[in-house]
Picture: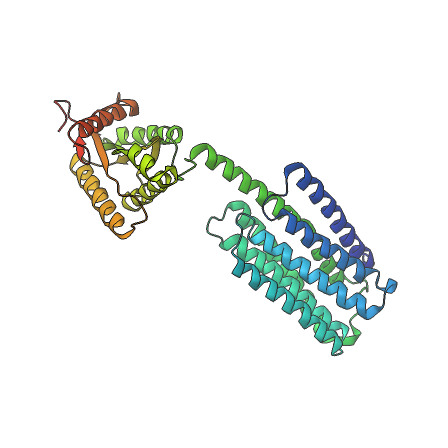
Length: 390
């Protein structure tokens, strides 16, 4: 039976690295070296140089070729996996330091192993296990991240498959020892080197696809979220509230709208500066999010005015919720003296929606109640009533 020459497969792997490297450079120049893109390219470059030294080892002393070539592949692989795992966030310095220490330990360990006279089978076993660990690290990072997606889970499965193929190669090489034929034509060797080639393709595709996904998520967030507080902006809040109101109409459950405005917010800006005003808005947003339920919608309506859509909430529930919020603000401001003290006025409107109910009407009613709270002295909760605000 004729097998594909593994030297040719190894050469194709090198060629694939070169092509991927060129594509990454072109992509980065047209879209910008954002995030970890520059470091991912460096990782791919190190692997390309290392693979070239391993393939054309007769061009330089064999010992130098093996030690330097494998070291560059290990370092480049570690940098590549690092970029894939942290593609959507820049890790803290301590995390980066640990990755550097691990990568350095791997390269030093392999060098010492080679200098100690380890045979070919042992070296292949170690190299294959290192690649397997890299693949498993990438899979764990993709699958176990806080905001994992279906794309990341699918790519994680591919990396697990690649890790398994390298483990098989490692277990095949170890018992053969010095008799292990590195470039011999065999089905297992062919599969092993093809898996390395696939790793080259999949890792690059994974990084580019996830980078694009992260960009799309950021664009969507920018279109639907308030840039300062991170909560829903006005347009997104209205759209989501309309859908939720339709559900409340079908279920005939009470619905409450909260309109919340800061008292004398201009005084805060004029006294402490706009940076302090921004901290106040952020502080308030965080406190509200710690109080409201998962099903409630919270958004910035404009300026220092905020809005809450609370489904399945009676007027009594709304009053209790407003009081709870004001109490939480008092406690938080007593603890955090870096935030200028502030108060808010709250207007609410509660209805059991009918087929003709609309979100605009509820907002108008809650806004009227808010105006009453302002006129009545501020720092209070007023509930809308068709017979007059209470």
